[in-house]
Length: 274
Image (tube, rainbow, N blue to C red; front, side, top):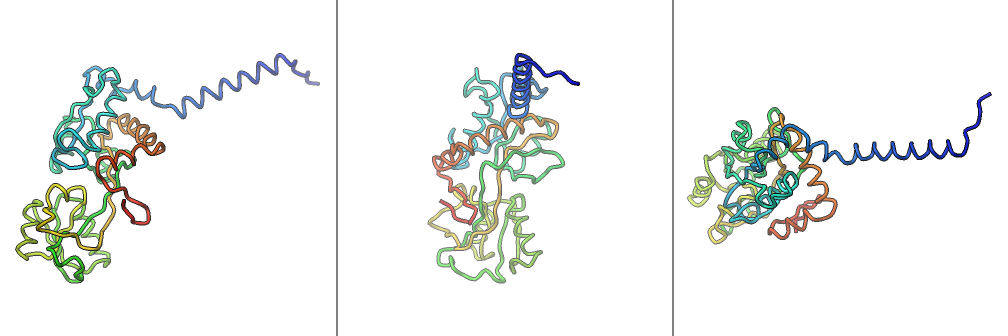
């Protein structure tokens, strides 16, 4: 017959179980201390800066030292090097053409430069989305309500809008003709000359390239694009740390406030932007 445990032994057993549970919760819910000991984070701490690829002259995102992506870059760097303050981030200018190469060559640690989530998972890891964008058809004034059926739509080949439109055409969602261009200025000039009927652009780049006097927005919006922080798949700690930071910002409502303060419309699931 098994003996009964004394009240003291029961109390000790309960306390031990509670302590063990707390330790497990800390390990599961608070992975950040472990991430700080990872090889990639240790390299950053030894170097003294987190090298972050950002666009320049991109209103609302990174423009003259202000913008959502610039702020996220500094916040992530300060998370790794809190004693350095804003100096923890070394902002490295990238473009749509150079950003992946700089990540691949380890010239930058992370990119916070409108990287489309899951666009190149063979080489890069992506965080949760920090901003959801849509695409607009840019037309000449007076054509805001023209039927798009059978029209020729321009896209920039390196832009995600190009692949979105190609997919929509292939799936018979849109019956339009697509013409690719090497740059936004070249494409918009084609709209002005009447060589194409509209230009499809991510709204994130519209403010940089589109003159509101010369052009107008078509009434239809198209597509949804999620932007995420990107890093090499060989440096997973950067994205794990970014996810912790972004989830905190999302849950507290801070990320939405940051978007609004940067002048960026906030996407709603039902398609509304405010």
